[in-house]
Image (cartoon, rainbow, N blue to C red; front, side, top):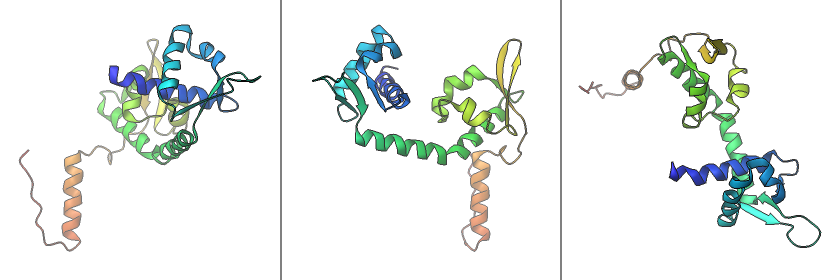
Length: 185
């Protein structure tokens, strides 16, 4: 957890800056966004990573502010494009996860907890669940929100070993003379 502390602070500050109107955050407003105590952690992050965060306006009439550097903005744009391209993979992985559960449902809080590890966007409830009502729904059961799978897909209920075997068999039928071996693992 200690190893992930700094990267999570950097990503959180990046999101705060990007949510601002002019893509810059006045340092006096940082306390409003994160609180008094956490402000100092963010200030140290800003100082330690000048290649990511640029500080301006400290002299003259302009108030001090922090922005993303040009390189960091470019990477953030590329990250957004990559997430858009990977959306079908996120949907497939989320469907597989729900198919693994007993009732094809998982508490929404648990999905939020592992959302980062699954690669889900922070706003996955809006961007994925409501975008794909044919696959997902949110239902409240006994006062707890659950993410439900709407349709079972037998094509997704295949193990990695079965997929590998099918791929090797397709290669063999495509003219390859290699025999397919099934290991005993």
